[in-house]
Image 1: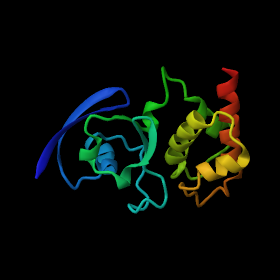
Image 2 (image 1 turned 90 degrees about the vertical axis):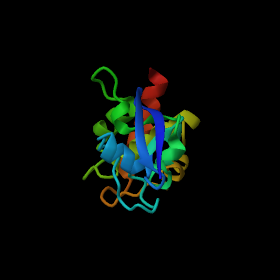
Image 3 (image 1 turned 180 degrees about the vertical axis):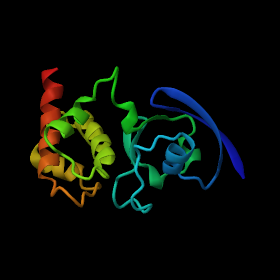
Image 4 (image 1 turned 180 degrees about the horizontal axis):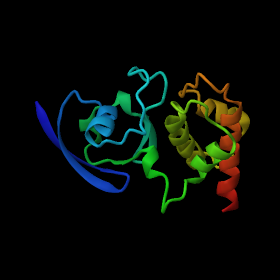
Length: 157
């Protein structure tokens, strides 16, 4: 069975016919061709597919596309404005909060949501906030530094 859905992704309205079983992660990557949203596990364990749905961080492999009908979705591609990185993206770059980069989009989106809730998080709050996102390369030290730098940049601007 196919459903017609409409959603706003990175500020652009999209309408698509989708099967009821199509995951939001696959709609984003395969239909909308926004490949910054990574699929790492398809079981919600890694967090690489995290996007903002109506401002909330959601692992897009845990949500059917039809459930996002009418939603406002932001992917990592939608964070930069006018050719400038979002402060969180810039902080990950400046603080070397990535190595292979596979987990980075999910980490960045999760950080955006975390800083919206807690503009001045402690290190413990940062680590707790990121616990649903796995990185197999960095050991998290520079990721935590990146989140701290992004929080400071938000307060300074």
